[in-house]
Image (cartoon, rainbow, N blue to C red; front, side, top):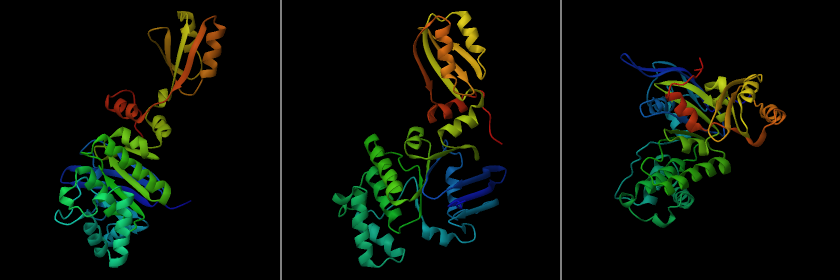
Amino acid sequence: MQEPIINLNQVTKQYDNHFAVKDLSLSIHKGEVFGLLGPNGAGKTTSILMMLGLSEPTSGSVQVLGINSTKYPIEVKRKVGYLPDNVGFYANMTGIDNLIFTARLNGIPKHIAKERAEALLEKVGLKHAALKKAGTYSRGMRQRLGLADVLIKNPDVIILDEPTLGIDPEGVRDFLNLINSLNKDEGITVLLCSHHLHQVQQVCDRVGIFVDGKLLAHGNIDELVRQLFLKDTFVIHAVASPVHDVLLEKIKAVPGVTTVELLHDNSVDIHCEEDVSSLISRLIVESGSDLYQINKRDFGLDEIYHRYFEGREINEPH
């Protein structure tokens, strides 16, 4: 089995009596886009700093590309690109000069640095602003320049910390499309930290829900649903007429059905442990009712996240 490209094992970061991160174990594999999702103050940035070797864990181990980040942070920084939530540039230098400066700091020869900077500015949609001073760039343009700056050293992994803060909706869409294309076309592994649920769901292969320094659950959407909503993984929505008490009792008796909710307009939400829509549809018809519609409602990341914080019946993984 392929070794994870980022591996955190029982990592804890403690400040006096406060745990910024507690017992964090996480593996991210080559070529995936992983979203670390959580509210501000959840410990996402602290986790990133430990991955980069910029902060030392109180306990546990962190490895990036097989390198111990705590012992060899410089080696990690050579291979990993990091875009913080508020990237800074030399305001009196042009966009391309900022990129060339970063490239030179990373030991890239000047002529190669210039070629690479020009290519990256085109890739991120800033070719037209290459000779403008970075101080005149909008927030969205600075984030695009930041992405080019991260890519200038050809990293194996890029870590993005709240990269879309302060960007207008069109800019967010374009930025996320860039992340997607970098991952699909060039195979770059991406760790995206954010509290914007729909953005994470749009581009990430897997998601980790991170709250109060703890990773509560991780996986793709289906896996998160199974971890967080074990009692009602499936919700079947049916519209039929008539919906009488006898029919409702028969539906409740179907193996795997946990809850039946009668809604307005002769519609029913059936919560169940497995997909029993074919059984439900047959039962409705055989009961003499007319079936107008039946479909399985999938949980979105927004509902998973918000239902957790509403304190409903959730099974936290241990």
